[in-house]
Length: 193
Image 1 (cartoon, rainbow, N blue to C red):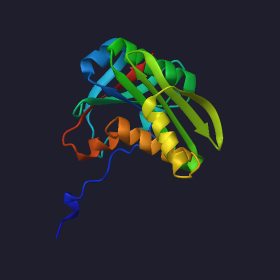
Image 2: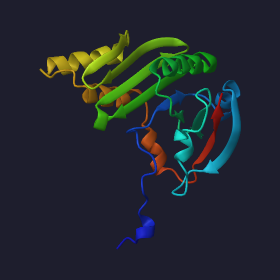
Image 3: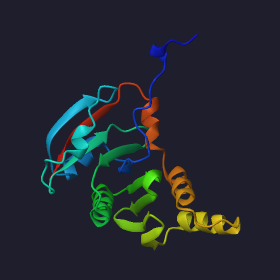
Image 4: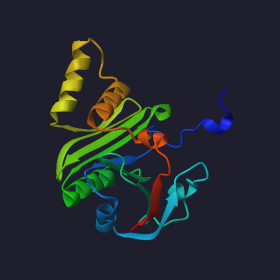
């Protein structure tokens, strides 16, 4: 019989989590291009305090962030910025400065909202924002996304926003939930200004 000490609680989910998946970069190179302050390296475990990400007392120009050590070929950067255009610009900036693929994802099924921004070496591949049955942004010239949409149509299904999101997410990169399988994960938290 397994004791409760052997059961590991999932610490992170891809749901309701605004995160960037950054391929082939180092943590130090990511931190170097970001204007950061108040950084602190911590172990990411059950005691980790998430409250700083949504600190309402901070000025709007100050953005808390979390950056995880690389797992396989991917780093994960989390922030809590709702503005879609600002998120798109951050995706493009990271992708250009790091000369790599950067994918931003967010989904919240409770408020029927999903968003993604996909960039490669500073070029926008796709951006999409749907909330409450309204498409607020849809720029797509990305073969994988077009193929997913066509597949859903060929199956006689509507382009249900969750289907599009999950198919795209799982085809493009490893889920941030891989962090739940790792031991001794380090995270750098701080402020972007």
